[in-house]
Length: 484
Ligand SMILES: *[C@@H]1O[C@H](CO)[C@@H](O)[C@H](O)[C@H]1NC(C)=O
Ligand SMILES: *[C@@H]1O[C@H](CO)[C@@H](O)[C@H](O)[C@H]1NC(C)=O
Ligand SMILES: *[C@@H]1O[C@H](CO)[C@@H](O)[C@H](O)[C@H]1NC(C)=O
Ligand SMILES: *[C@@H]1O[C@H](CO)[C@@H](O)[C@H](O)[C@H]1NC(C)=O
Image (cartoon, rainbow, N blue to C red; front, top):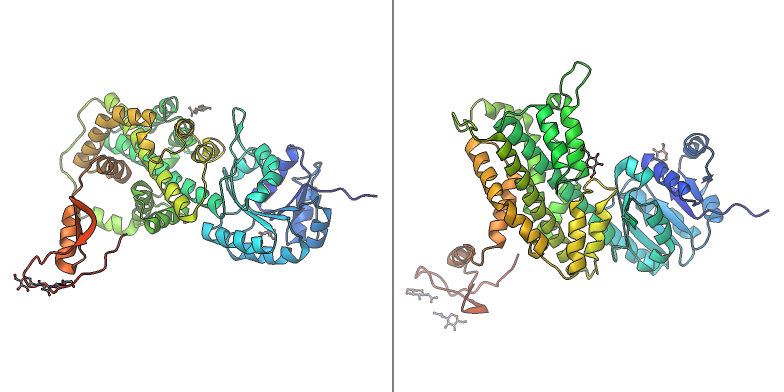
């Protein structure tokens, strides 16, 4: 009379949770479903999970009892306190070597803390990024697990089998220690903000600069989807642009131009500032959403602040569309190069051993930023796992070189026309910054020393900080040097 045993339990039966359970069930795993409100469990078993092998548990005790050992328990509950609360509830029922996986959108610092606290109790904690929305959860998400590495051998098969696949390869691999899985997910979301803003800038230029209509723009995105830009976001943009409502109007043109955000882009930008990494494109994409949401202020200013007058695009539109495509591609390369710089510096600081090619592959399918392009990034890291600047990889160096003239034309034309392109522009400024051996920061150092005696180094003697009595009135100060 042995009770049916479950391979894994999942707590939290909102849509993501339900879909991951059904996905696991499809792949032959027996899943135990639990939700604090037990009605929800019964409803799920009677409806969505009807005819499957899913087991329902009415209590934590029952859930723990039916699990094979080591127990694998995945949480898909709201980030923050609910995760800590469930961990506290679970702990007394678990034993050494059992595994708790947090599949929610937790902040990586929380995951760092939980991995450490639970390690002390003998419990293996994993924080896994999950991307792809409801559809992805059901049929193949991108999964980014990190945390206590001893957990990986016990969850690898389940995770890799339910993940999206690109050819034979699962979009899921072990990311690294501590909160690195959630950190990688956060950077993914930041990159998603950037990709979306770049597409919006292209749309703005085509619509208001070139005067193209929605069908023309949709067709252009369909064409772009056959090039290096082949990606989920380009594809859905093509569909969105041509979508008409019941009245026969293009729906996108009726939508209020005030962007929302849930905060993961902002967190990426905050980390970039914390780690001193110039993630200018993601930063601009977050600010672009902020500016868009100042709708009332913009309405007032639009009546008063003039733009360039009488400037019209009078060139070859088809040719310019190709320039825009190249500008988008080049800017996107910059954004990903910046994203990997942030991963690199976080890895240094936290002593995570990140597998960058593996991360590119995890993003290659299943998630919102999935694209053919990530396959090229994977190849770049396969070719050189130590690569710390994506722009120096031969493939991307050629790509940027090829796009450069178009990119500059687009930014210049946007400025002439008065169309804001914060991400195209900041990407180009970053490119011009990183490729220059000498920037004007010598003057910043002189100014800092002049007014605050912050000292500077001479090119001829780096590492030695000196102060100059610039005015003849300065005190004999030697401020401690500081780096940002
Ligand atoms: C359980 O179900 C309720 C009702 O659908 C839902 O609001 C809640 O978030 C679910 N999760 C947990 C952990 O209780
Ligand atoms: C975009 O390209 C992918 C293949 O790379 C294809 O599956 C998809 O249908 C294309 N979408 C559009 C709108 O062209
Ligand atoms: C700075 O220069 C002025 C003028 O040469 C001099 O009088 C003063 O003593 C100097 N101050 C220090 C701290 O050297
Ligand atoms: C300024 O400070 C340095 C180091 O303490 C000292 O050697 C030097 O004599 C001082 N100069 C003046 C003008 O007080």
